[in-house]
Structure formats: structure tokens, C-alpha cells
Length: 305
Ligand SMILES: [Zn+2]
Image (tube, rainbow, N blue to C red; front, side, top):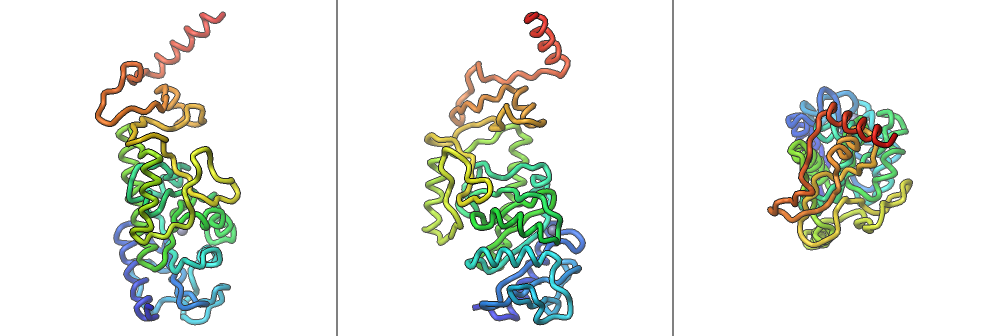
């Protein structure tokens, strides 16, 4: 069992790492840990996480009443309290604004594709909690929807939240999310993501027990997403079949927005191939300029008349 003084030092160290890695700017972010059964040790409001000292921390009860400390507790205390209420197994909560993961949160793109084995084994996938005004009670409400099924989530137009059985466990999940986001961004810039097959995803999740990784919820069944208002399983985009599949773009061409438009323009079929095997001619990508595409559409309309 960690002592209060070692937990204070650990919060200082995690704050220093978050700031050094650019996960927070200025006074952003907040960190808390359980201190026994009914108390929390938490970063104070309005300090840079890169330059904290152990004596700055606040102690509150689980209702958020300050018990000790010269400073007021974090402005996001309500979000932390909600996590501890919903998850008795969680002993630490970390919130930051890591730039690449937050970029996905701003773009409204969840990190839910099966592309990295270690992420699938540890976090499963990372959804996006609805936008809520920071520091208000809207934010814990948005987080509540996902926290029972996920150990990490993006916060729309805001940042990311991770939880764990101890402080470094929660912090490392923040590192994993940002690392995953960077790799996903590069893969998408390169124009292709090789999705791991569903069977392999299930195999990876089964390994959790071997490595002592506790997951808050199982994988959702392949035939659908969990209930919108109460997810009790983790949604992962993974095609069924054996072995790794090549999926050039799994964005549904019927989807709206620029992504759907791009998928339509590419004629994304989602048809899988085999790694290292040349794709057949009928799957060869055709690139058209906007004017060429417009001319084709106009021709098609003319021929219908
Ligand atoms: Zn924030």
C-alpha cells in the first residue's frame, strides 16, 4: 500500500511527465488517486502540472468536500468523483489534452479500429464522450456513459481521460492513447490501415488474463454496436476472417461529410485482400480531379435525359 507521501511524489512525477511530453499546456490537466477507502488526493486548481510540489495537493472526500490543503481542488473534480463513484476498481484518474488524440476528439473520430495488438490487449478501443462544457456537471454526465465499459476515452473538443488500478497504470494508458493516435494518423496519411481480424482481436483479449490485465467490459458482438445510452461492451472495428486483412478505407461510403465523400470518390468497397498480395485490377484506385468527376457526373445526367 502506497503511503500518502509517496503518492504525493508520484502525482508530481506524473504531472512532470505529462507536461514534458506536451500532453498539457499551461495549467491544463488534472490527476487524482484514492487515499484509502473514502478520501482522494488530487491536483489543485490553476497550477502547471510540470512544476508541482508534493505539498500543493488537496485531500477531499468522495463527495468533493476539501479536507486538507491550502489550495482548491481541480476544476474537473466532478469528473474525477464520477469515475470513482462508477468504478470501485479504479484507484487513479488522469486527464490531459495530448495533441494528436485531442485532434481525433476534435475531428469526431474515435480510436476504435483494430490496428495495434497492444492497444487491443490493454485498452480495447477508445470512444469519444459527447462534448460537455469543461468543469461543469455536464462533463461527468458525458463520461458516465462510457466509463463502466472503458478505461480510456476521448472527450469531444477537449482532451482525453484515463483510469487505472494505480496512478502509473492510469498515466501509461494516457501515453498509449496518444501513441495510438499518432500511429493511426500516420497510417491514415499513408492511405491505408491493415485491420486485425476479429478472431485475432478475441485472441488478444483472451491474453489479458495471462498478463493480469483487467478489462472493464468484453468485446461487443460482431453484429452490432452496444446500446447507445448504456454501452456495456467495447466496440472494435475488426473484420471477421482469419489473419490480418487489408482494408484500404473502412469509412462507410454512405457516411456524410468529407470522409464519406472521400470514400465514395475512391469507391471504397472495404473488400479485403491478403497482406503482401497485389490487389486485383478491379480494386485499383482511380484518382479523379474535381473537374473530371464533375464532367463524368454531367455526362451521366445528360445520358439519363
Ligand atoms: Zn481539460
